[in-house]
Amino acid sequence: MTERFNGSFTQQEPIPQAGIEAALRVMQSGRLHRYNLVPGEVGETALLEQEFAALTGARYCLAVASGGYAMATAMRAAGVRPGDAVLTNAFTLAPVPGAIASLGARPVFVGVSEALTIDLEDLAAKADQAHVLLLSHMRGHLCDMDRLMQICDDAGVLVIEDCAHTMGAAWNGVPSGRQGAIGCYSCQTYKHVNSGEGGLLVTDDADMAARAVMLSGSYMLYERHTAAPDPEVFERVKYHTPNISGRMDHLRAAILRPQLAALQTQVARWNERYRVLEEGLRDTPGLTVIHRPEPESFVGSSIQFLLLDWTPTEVAEVLQRCGARGVELKWFGSAEPVGFTSRYDSWRYVDAPRMPASDRILAGIVDMRIPLTFSPQDCALIARIIRAEVGAVHQNSGSFRSVAP
Ligand SMILES: *Cc1c(COP(=O)(O)O)cnc(C)c1O
View 1 (cartoon, rainbow, N blue to C red):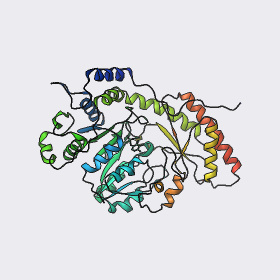
View 2: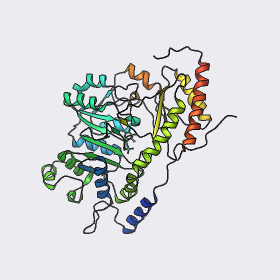
View 3: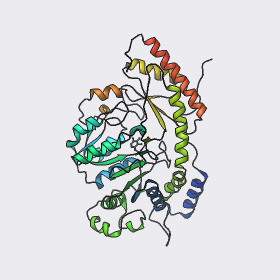
View 4: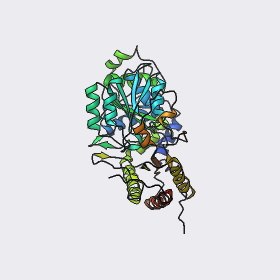
């Protein structure tokens, strides 16, 4: 009998009951705007910021409308100007180069390693081309952050971290988003906490934090922030910082607070599922499992593997065969952007030279979401299906591949 998986790859868990009740209270109050507070009230949005600052150990936190908005705001707060070059990952999602382009700045892509992290050799070679790196921890893979910070510090490059896939992760015990000058997170439905849309930004830098608050659309109400710098800092920036509205509201914050409180539990559940998939895929001929380094504590909300040096036709066949058995895989190597996947060369507003070493890796990256609505048994079944179909295509390919040492 051929096994088939019948679950949905895009089905989230419900919002926790505490979040639903808090959201109802906000709606009953009628005061949804973050600055609409009664005397003595802190409000859901400011409380969310306090709690996320505490969770990450950051001095300051700002909640905003989206992860993309958080990244653009971080770059503005860091002084990126139109025309500036900004280093960023070649392997990432469209909102990352998009955030750079939204400032009229210019992405300079840095290659991807076989660990699916930023290629640190390539970064070192390009570090003199920009003053800012927008580092995307794409699909939750953390590079050697100590080495990355060394390279960037030596070159005077300020690091802004895109932690859309690493909320709850850490490198050597340091929470993701806390090595760079600013960490940016997304609270969009497909990330680690779900308010439909939303973003968070953390930093220890008082001036950047104050500029970010002003940029987000605080008018002169910044004293209603409880995870922001003292008013003196705002005095320095308030006449020079434009208002580019992108605030978070109480309703989203109310939904998010109980989810943040449960984040560590959710991380453990994701990783349990990830490990089942990883074990099930290990030693499949022709398939490379991505090595997770010791210092990295990750959040297995998705899994990737490499079909390195397979032809596009063979990769497409694997996707088609898995799809026919209910397993939805995504391919980052496709020449055409499909759904949420795209390649650096599909962002044609960027003048990007080809990167052959990265092209080889991108061409082999296969990706799968792991919603928490999947059970560990579901994950074991999915792994059996992928293993069988990769095996079938590999066997039929007829081409002999050298096995990497
Ligand atoms: C989702 C995502 C973002 C942006 O988040 P939005 O909240 O959707 O704007 C940024 N980077 C990566 C890698 C993402 O996956």
